[in-house]
Image (cartoon, rainbow over all chains, first blue to last red; front, top):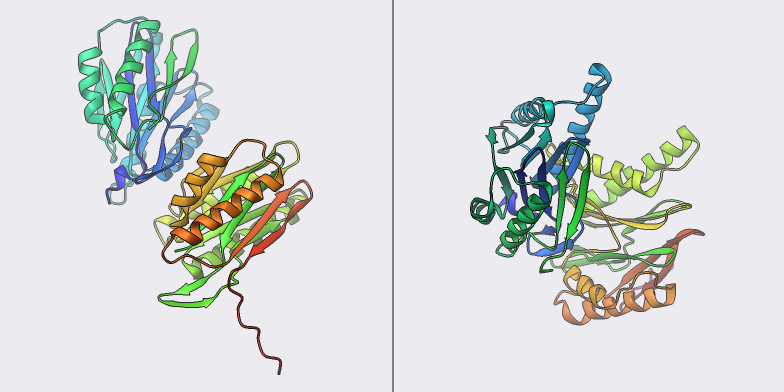
Amino acid sequence: MQIFEYNGSALVAMVGKNCFAIASDRRLGVQLQTIATDFQKIYKIHEKLFIGLSGLATDAQTLYQRLVFRHKLYQLREERDMKPETFASLVSAILYEKRFGPYFCQPVIAGLGDEDKPFICTMDSIGAKELAKDFVVAGTASESLYGACESMFKPDMDAEELFETISQALLSSVDRDCLSGWGGHVYVVTPTEVTERILKGRMD
Amino acid sequence: MESVFGLVGKDFAIVAADSSAVHSILVHKTNEDKIMILDSHKLMGASGETGDRAQFTEYIQKNVALYQFRNGIPLTTAAAANFTRGELATALRKNPYMVNIIMAGYDKDIGPSIYFIDYIASLHKLDKAAFGYGSYFALSMMDRHYRKDMIVEEAIDLVDKIIMEIRSRLVVAPPNFVIKIVDKDGAREYAWRESIKDAPVPGV
């Protein structure tokens, strides 16, 4: 029994022109059995910062609660929101704290930093950060996602085109993974607005 | 293996559980009540390791009562579910409770709700949920026959269909089930479905 494949997940984030998109599947499973088809894997930290958590659902929930706690404290002390780069370092530190008893999660972080410059990164379950300029992927469908994103991605896409691209990449990848899918959840974030959409895909 | 399942109706929630207490090949008793009434409007059906189940459900019940004593108002179902998840998550990496839980409750302004909490503390709010080998039959029957806003008679009819399916198709099928309901009038036992009665204790 592989612990990273216990619940099933697919996450992807992409950078566009002054915007980013982050998308996840919606399945919550217990190995071969599907429990729910509306499970949330992407969480908002603040208006311009989102984190997706793949891997074991219980650890994703625990980790999310700890991160929200830390961010709220930061907001109280600093009287401002955290920059995405800072948040990524915080997540990395929290994961490495548990180096010899880790959270079985792989986070995908996406945000708009200084001057609304898009920032994305992913890390492994012990906090090894992986910055990228184009896209990052995580979850049981990550190998398919790498292939789909590599072929579909173009730099400097606007919000509409970015939404189309990330949606197609997500849906085609989860269709090849039995543990993820059952629809998609996409957030497209520009400096002025956040658009949340549910995708209808193959419900199997 | 123990079966617990639950579903949400029009303005009520139902939880049903089998009632055999089994130790290896021996059935200790067939009228074990595995659905704990937490307070006036909450139920917790639990399955798993017998000692953990009995101890953990009682622990949650007493803490729910303590909150009401201290604060003068009862916990909402969501709060009780999150508290339970927190206790399971904290114990997970020290001394895990092997207990799967379906928590049902009725809140005045929210209505009925059901929370699925598995033994590794993954929490999700659902309309229908099931645990154990019986879940393979229960979830499929519910996928076929469940509709939103069923009345009590329809829901009990579905529960009976599920019990029939478990009895006829599961090789080590539990003979007896208990059904409990929670609605605006409170949490209470609805019925037993017995096909084997324990031998009565002889009068002394």
